[in-house]
Image (cartoon, rainbow, N blue to C red):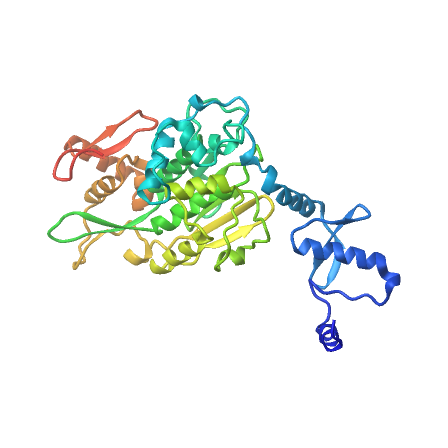
Length: 418
């Protein structure tokens, strides 16, 4: 190295990638520092059985948890969970309809060529969801297993959703748990949020139709949900996607930490796409559920800005990644996401609570009393009375079982039950 360059480097001092030793007698210290430099490149290297890492301008022994994470990352390219064969699983144990819908949607979006067949195994082969010897891999099961199939070997195919009262987890208003394939679980998460997220609404004079503004941009929440299913750690049997809704925020929780050197701060900026489960990510992309090339979080940020909402926050440790959306206050009008004060545009007259309940059911078919009351910020008894009146006047009907059914608008001026 040129003498001037050496002098300039020395003047800059030690850093995460630069270290100095006084003489060759410090070779052990030098070797430990070299191991730490290798860790900067996400490669775990040990000296005399101990791995090291660089923290600012110092070298220290690497914590066991950090070492384990680096080992897992180094094996991910060739030995990751989604590539492994799904032992004992056959094509008849997968949902053929879900497979067909995936390829049809991929073709419609221009994200896949027409394969000339709808034979499930041929489609899975084109999606890289078979092993080299033609068996189903674990990604295929995660994406397309039937909802009613026993999965004792895959208990992590699970979704937990909850609506908490207030801003802590001390009291539930709703708490559910589901098992199934990734696409089915994502639909269930969306259904839960449709039931519980507030909407701002107004009635436009002359139309008597309710115009709703979601509390959060639908596409932003959908992108965050899809990212949770795509990037989660499927290797842990106890892990599950979590959706937690509070009075002031929505949290989407994905098992497993960030990998390949990504940080929460980097996710808020343009960055390379480095999916932990590329086969699952590829199928979600073809289905139209996610963006590619690291655009997902940037797309979410843009949608929130356009809707005049606060930026999302991302927190991460080795156990989970949590994406948080702040909810606007209830007293912010239409732009603030209020759902209880539904006003007729151009007047100060509020529509009746009966009309508000009917309008909500029209906009959210299949809703139940408790979510309606929470979303409209009405007393539960008020909604129960309104629902009873609307049923007696034949404007709505309850469809389904007492546990899973909901209210739908009847075939009056507002259309057929949905």
